[in-house]
Structures are given as structure tokens and as C-alpha cells.
Length: 407
Image (cartoon, rainbow, N blue to C red; front, side, top):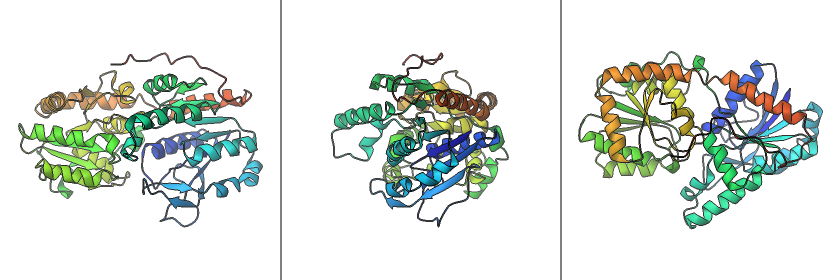
């Protein structure tokens, strides 16, 4: 199969979309399929970057994006100029990964090339836009996000979501076409050789100091400020508690200011971006507990990453994280309430035996989220679409079998 993908983000930009795209690309290639990815060129790059997941990457000149300087806006004309070159490759299907330039130019390319289209819905925009367009009323932004999402999803032949919660959300929006739940899997081979003691030594953290870790984009919608309040509450019972925040993003300055206001300068450590090949894994393993409270995750891959390394989790179960946390394996599920969350953190910090049991169960549970099996599911969807006439928005799939009730 010859698969064409297009995305508004990819490595070196680090986020869940980049990770998901890379994971599927790598698995497709390992199964003998060809993948070409159209993605932005970033300022530090010159020309086409080396493949990251085994796929061919076509880098597109891009512009600065003032609302989010970490991201880039691809130049549409440069994408359309690829039409003749791409037609010669005789692709079977086009997979759109993001809803901005990639969506609109992806649809144009698909029409020109006569390809069926799949789009992944990675982000809950109704809970995301307010943090970046805060001068407009929140209810307007939610309404606009829902209409925007429904219109885009109804324009493609199939939509892929990572969790049942996102499936239910798109149906409520009025998406009437085919929607399939296909999470992004993980391979345990990516998560070996971590050394939490090495990370602690490097950052002057005592071997026995009670330590919490949060990894991800440092953005407002990740609800990291809530974790600061949890840390302040835990500190009243365990004065040495330390919260490590690994990542970069637009909320970093605000969170550092709130840390000072809460008197947590000695209890919070911001370590910035860490390389996935070594330092990031060490950071995960340096934690006694992985803590997470995002309200907007469509899946929550960092939960699986922590679990794959045997780190027990305390997390809220909202939106996409419900599917990962519903079995109750390797984690304690908390309410988005400082007292409840901090009680569970203190319980786990104070019980080494419970941490060890949860950590072992977390590792076994993460192994069930096989990237190769989920890639096979995606390929099966591709195969079905290639055998169908591409009439967007006309096919309706049955709901997934494991739909969870809303809390």
C-alpha cells in the first residue's frame, strides 16, 4: 500500500500528534507499506529532514504563527505544486493528521489525485481555543469549535479518533460519517534502559525524596496549575515532596510565577525539553508517581509511557484518558479536586508496597497496547476505504463495542 500523509506538525516539534504520526508510520513501514509525509519545515532545518519514523518526509516552507510560536503555517501554494510529483507515485489513500492548512490543502490534493481521505481527530478544540483567543467569549469559541470540527469531519471519507470519549463527542457535534476508534499504541522496546537514580543525581534530588513527575507540553489546557495546588497540599503533609515538570510550552512563564506565589520554589523543578532517547525516560523513572490532570486529552499517551516504565499513576479520568484508566490497572483515579487528588498521592507515596504492586501491574497493562496490532486496524480501515467510492460523509459506522458511560 502507498500511503500519503499530511500534517501541520511533526518532529522536531514534539507533541502527541507528532508521536502518533511517527508511531503509525514506523509500524506501516515494518509491515511493508510505503509512507510519504508532507510536513512543515522548521527554522532550524535546511531542506528535507532525515526520516524519523522510516517514512519519506517532504518538508514545506512555513511561516511564523503568532498565536503559537512553537508551530508553523505551511505555504499552501508550495503544497499544491507537488501535485504532478505525487501523481506519479500513484498513492492509494491520503491521511490528514491535523485540521489547519493540512486539512484544506489535503482535501485539494486528494481531489486532484482521486484519493479517498482519512482524518485523525487528535485535539478537543472546544477546550483548547480559549487559552489562545481569550479576548472572545468562551461560549462563542466552543460553538465555533464544534461547528468547525463537524464541518471538517463530514468532509472526509472516515475519521479516526483514539478513544470512545472522542467518538461520542463527534457524534454529539453532528458528525454523520464514518468514525472509527483506533488508539495510538506503544512498543515496549522504546522504553528500556531508564535510570531514575541517574536523573536524580544529575539534578541534585535525594534518592529517598518523594517525587512526582509530569511530562508533556506545558500548555494551559494541560491543567498543570492544578498539580501545583496538589503539590502545595501534599507539602503540608510531606514537606520534602518534589514535582518535576518536563516539557516546554506557552504556559511555562505563568506556571513559574504561580510556583513562586504558592511558595513552592523548593518543591517544583522545571527541567524543560528532554531527549526521548535517554533523559526523558530517566525523568519518568525518577518519579515515585506520575501525575496527570489534563481536561482535554484525546488519548493521553504519556500515561502509557509512564506505565510502560513501571511508574504508577495518579490521574483524573477525563475525555480520552478514561479509556486508558477505566480498567483501573497501574493507577489510582482521582477527582479534579485538590483534596481527593492529594489524598491519593499521599497514600501512594506512603506505601512502598502499593507503589511496587501498581508499578508492576502498570507495566503489564501497557504491554497490551500494542502499536503493531493497532496499526493493523488502521490498515484494515484503509483497505475498506480503497474499495469504496469516496463519497464523503455518507457512511456511518456502528459505535465501538466498549463505549464507556460518562461519569
